[in-house]
Image (cartoon, chains in turn yellow, green):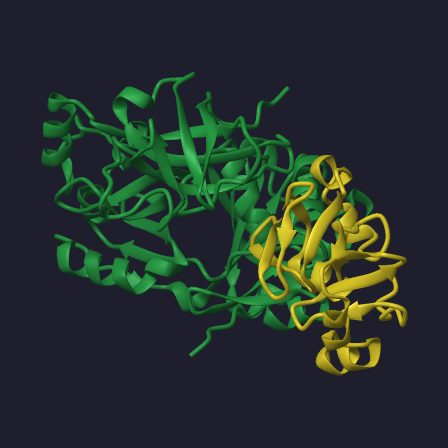
Length: 127
Length: 361
């Protein structure tokens, strides 16, 4: 599996990524995050329509050994959740930037995106 | 100071993720906890358990001395037999859980938990009547070879006839040219051996097992898989499921307590009294019927009131369910009883099930 950092995404220091697609932003966790977590066995997702707040916990991801909080890269309303994670959470391990996405958010303040790290800055963080 | 087993370098070369485990630098996983767990259930896995302690009693009266210290009965064993036992305090709670090896009535070796090595040795020294214990922990390395292909793998590397070594029996012999105690014991629910060898020989034995096991799909396994494997069997982990505050009867380990053994043992009086009065709380195995994973320390609720605590829990990789253990009032301990586990403020329903969680076909 490639551990390269996709150039087209934005990142948090807590290892979430955000991808802008039209009016919504898709959120997941990075390759580095899934690798340090180990086998993901459970994801607690927010409800459809829930409001999430930048920097605040919006869900929980559990591996065989550890429980970790998911932090929102930006504020907004959850318009889609990846229900596939309920039955098969391990897709976060196998495809963290693709099928392992977690939620899609309608941002309430798109300017928050500017505060996120770009690929180069996130790469620096991992060094 | 972090302590290292003689296999520390070997783990690093294999790309293990190392963690601190009660002061020991140990591999938690090499590739994936689930893959390592599966290797043990379907093929064979190797575990470095050299952090475990070994305490020896040697000399005339060794058996009688040890028998006063442990809850199980070595007098009922033959030479070459081992027993699982408790070292109990005066209240019947656990100082530790151990495996005692009877080489002869004059030589007993006790394998103790790494977290309790110093405590156990001091405790034994203070209470041993007769033979004085000797701490041999630094002289031994220990490698567990576990899984349906484990026996055949070890057999290929030794002249000892392993078909004659039954469960909880042991023999001495060379494995891959390394002098070993070959013990048919383990902590996974699978068949296999725990091999005790000299510290200096550990790398040779480990490498030989890894190489000879290649055709079997042998995998080095870390503490993560060790924990999920034992949890599926409802094997207790000291510090989680058993401790000094819960008695052997409460832990459901009455079978390792021989109240009628000659000479008695430390903690017996408390257990006799508890048995007569009735055990008020019990360690149960449960499955979550709602979503989530039970974890050590989560509250157990009945009708909103806290009645106990989860002692161990995981998403069982083989049983494919969220499973856990915990102490609950005796009235909630029967199979089919229901309660809730509080997970991040939510009450998630759970049901007491028959254990081990893993049903062997």
